[in-house]
Image (cartoon, rainbow, N blue to C red; front, side, top):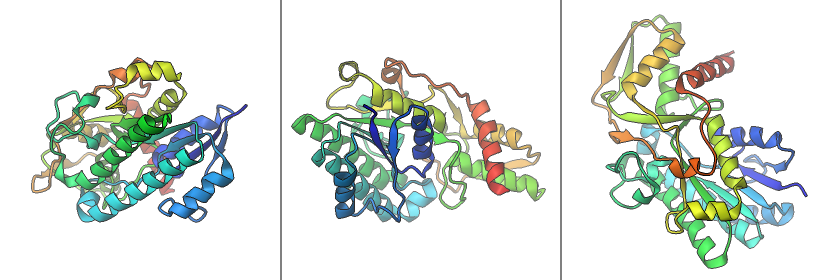
Length: 315
């Protein structure tokens, strides 16, 4: 019998990548856009689950954004993410969903977490203030899945990806993450023959990046892992699994790589009046490696693929 799978957030970068992967497996996949289903509406979500009788859920729906967006809209980030995940997780439980995968974010970890970050670092220190509301919502999602597993014996799994990029990314300079924001800036600078690009912060913080297609393969690997093998790897009180490339680079190094990929010949000026965020964020993904997953797309290759996709969006 084929799985009947609901991908929540299928129009987003991660959800669309998961959808592409699932379509090659022969599974029956169900989606719903925002007009058809308001994920913040408990009644609508409950009725959707009752009607469709899905047995697997990939919870990739979320309100996301970069440092600037998190600073400007903290209420929206905590409200919408809490509402979406609460409704889906609870309705999945009430309607007998066999497996659920909740997708979080590496921003759940303390600002000064030990590097590389292990899953056990969760709640061991203060969060980065610039994205605390979003991080608190994601932590609540992890603990909600753990709590339902403990009390009701559900099989709700959670994974925490590092910084993602790739097809379907958001290139709006007002609310995008660092990699797509830099890619768009360098492209527009090249097109207008600008002599310089102004980038936020000092460029010194180090970040890890993972192509979204690798994230999709990790999601399916975790969801499809035999229950006993999965249980042997996780800690019941820190049941989430990190998903990362295992390599990081400074934002300055990233800017140089993007500049080269785009073909920009000018200068990069660093605006140190803007916040840097956490000094370093590299995750330990060794637990996930034990399930048999490993990334396959290097940052250099991923940037070339991403810029090609970006150019297609401009046509």
